[in-house]
Structures are given as structure tokens and as C-alpha cells.
Amino acid sequence: MLQLLHTIVAEYGSEDPEMMQEKLKEMRILDNVELPEAVIELFVKPKEIVIDPVKEIVATELPVEEEEEAEIVEEVEPSEEVKPWFNPDPNQPQLVRMANLCVVGGHAVNGVAEIHSEIVRQEVFNEFYKLWPEKFQNKTNGVTPRRWIRFCNPNLSKIITKFTGSEDWVINTEKLVQLRKFADNDQLQSEWREAKRINKLKIVSFLKETTGYTVSENAMFDVQVKRIHEYKRQLLNILGIVYRYKKMKEMGPEERKAAYVPRVCIFGGKAFSTYVQAKRIVKFITDVAATINHDPDIGDLLKVVFVPDYNVSVAEVLIPGSELSQHISTAGMEASGTSNMKFAMNGCILIGTLDGANVEIRDEVGEDNFFLFGAEAHEIAGLRKERAEGKFVPDPRFEEVKAFVRSGVFGPYNYDGLMGSLEGNEGYGRADYFLVGKDFPSYIECQEKVDEAYRDQKRWTKMSILNTAGSFKFSSDRTIHQYARDIWMIEPVVLP
Image (cartoon, rainbow, N blue to C red; front, side):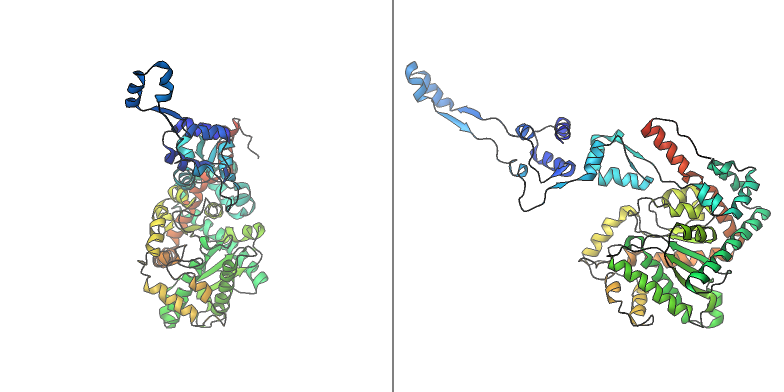
């Protein structure tokens, strides 16, 4: 710690105590702990001897033996302005700031996606970045194609090998790019759709076995599987489904079929044991599922399933057969994500915000092959401030869906606590901190574009192929190579 303090002082000087106070506030490793004397002395000016010049002149006219008596010396005490912030507050805890310790002690600091690395540089550790810019890097996460295509999706793997000419793509994912030139090929598209159909049949069997629900293989399989958390916004997804269901109920049978593509909406994930709001979301999803899945007016046009005990083995069944995958976190809150990479590798099209690795996936697969909606990371702070000032005006469709939930259509459970978190302008557990209401209109409008695209199966299949082709960048081998060369300074060995 002492070395860090000396480095900060050497970089910025000790002339401006207020500026130095701010630097130390951001960069200290030990918080609310008294600074070492060696550091304090850098800010405390030594005592000065000030002699009154008029009195000095008078003194010089006196005999030497009387000079000492005539000379008036004033001692100026050290400045008191900077002393208070040296002293610990006895009413506050003493803390070790582990993140700061890691930055100071580490050889390099990296975010796990480009947008995450930029947030680390400009917001989280900006003071450290200004001090050591060369220390900050980016290492986008990756997943292994050996497990997430070759092992869990053998049907698709055979097709990729056939059209790329070898199995080299398994350890050299750049070879996947070759699929782009065949994206419009009728033979590839036909085989690609058949592989997806076989994988969907596996999901149909799995869901029947684990949940008892029977779903149609001819529906679009729309999947969101990840940890249950408010920032990941499973609540936005299920509210979108509720809105869809409400609109279906307001239509006649023929109009309903013409307006909506059949969907099977699959959720999976676990909530932390004490995370009450996350558990409410799981409860809400299962209540919505029970209502919709037993509604004879809806039939196979819409099904909702929450998969129990979600884990990697379940993911290996769901991901290959998925057609739309939801990665809809509040922008700026998802560091990277890796399930988005796994889905894209398997030819699943993503709907999501510009958050985490979504940004880079969209760049690689092409803007036309990614369904984008929602506020961007740089807007989030302003939108929360707008809410706190009472300036947010909710979309009528958002108010409509909340009222529908409160009407009791999904059972007797009182959802005021869950809906109340989306209301108000301030307070813990209120004011829609994760901006579900703000993004709701653009989300449901984006879902309409999804329906439109899915009706054109040739277009959809092409988008699917281009997602797999564009996923080459997200192989874990590439990330390991980057770490090895930039941090460990060695050439890595690629596993077969």
C-alpha cells in the first residue's frame, strides 16, 4: 500500500490536497485506515518562521544584546485543511478493497468483452487506468466448439464438416467462416433445417419427460436459460409473453393464427436461495405457463415451459434445438455472457440489447442477423436520473400488461410486490432500476420483427447459417491464445 501511495504522490504531486484526497478515495487498498506518517508528511507543510519586517528594522538599530528581545517571531502552524481526511472514522468499518488490491498487484487487468473492458477503463477503474493505461486489456470470453457443437450437436457437426471439407473447424474455428459462401445454397439449407428439426424433437421428448407438457415441433423454439436475476430480465421476457397472450385472447381463432407465429417459450435457471424477487419471477413464469398451456383457445400457438433443475447437461439438449435465444440484460450490466456464444454457434438467432458479448456477436454475424432493441449502456445513468426526477412516462402497453397481471388471470398469488418493483421513482426494490418498462415497447416491437422473419424459412435458415459462421471468434482457444501471449508470455498448446 505504501508503494501505491508514493506512486500516486509521485504522479500527481502533493500541492493540491483536495485533488489528492479524491485520488486516494478512489484508489486506496485499505479504507478507513490511518495513512502512514511518511505519506502524511508529504502534505503537511513544515513550520515557518515569519519575522515582521518593520520590527526587524527596529531591532537592527538596537544593540546586539537587545536584538533577541526586540525581534518578534511568529510561528505558523501546519495547515489544518488536509488533516481530517487522514483520520479514520470510528463509526465506519475498516475495509480491504479487494478489487483495488487486484489491480495494483496484478500484471494485467482485463474485461471479458469489448464493452465490459471499456466500462472497466472509463468507469470502474478510471483512476487506475489513467495511472497505468498499458495494464488494461480486453480478453473476450470464449466457449469450446469441441463441446458446444461437436459433442452436443453431432447432426450439425456433420453438415459443417461436409461443407467446409474437413473437421479442422473443431480446433480452428476460423474455418467456420467458409459457411458464409454457402448460406443461400438450397442443399445446405435443406440439411440445416433437418438437423434443427431432429434436435427440436429431442427437446419435445425432454420437456414431456421433465415437465409433462406436450409442445409442437412445428413451433418456433424461443429459449432463455441463465441465472435468474433482475438485471438479466426474465421478467421482461415473461411480460412480453403475457402481452402476446392478452392480444391473442382479444382475437378470433382465424385472426389469431394469421397474426402470430406458433412459439414454445422455454425458461431455465436457478435463483439464489435468499433472492426473494428472483423467486417471485420463477413463480410468475410457472403460473403464466399453467394458465396458457391449459387454454384451449390458444392450443399450440403459444406454450410456456420452465425447465426444472437447469444445468450444463440440460443446456446440451436445449441449445442445439433452439431457434431464438434471449439475451436481454439491462445494457452495461452483463460483463460478457457465454451462453449467447453457445447459441450462436448452434445456428440460433439472438434477440438482445447491446450488452456484453452481444456487441461483438452482432458485429460478426451481421446486423441483419441479430434482433436488437433497447437502451444502450451510455444512456442508462440518464434514464435512471430521469426516473428519479419523476419524468418517466410509461408506455400504455406496459401499463396494460401490469393491470392484466393484477387482474388475477394467472391465479390467486398476489403479484403486487413484483409489479410494484416496476413502479415509483425511488426507493429500494422500486423505480424499475433495471428499466423493464423503458425497454418494453421496443422489445415487443422487435418480437414482431422476429415473427415476420420466421415466416420466411429460407431467410431464417440463412440467418441461422450466418450465426454459426460468425461464431468463429468466440472459441475459447482464441481467448487462451490471447492470455498466453499477453500475460503468460508463452505459446499455448491447443488440445485436440
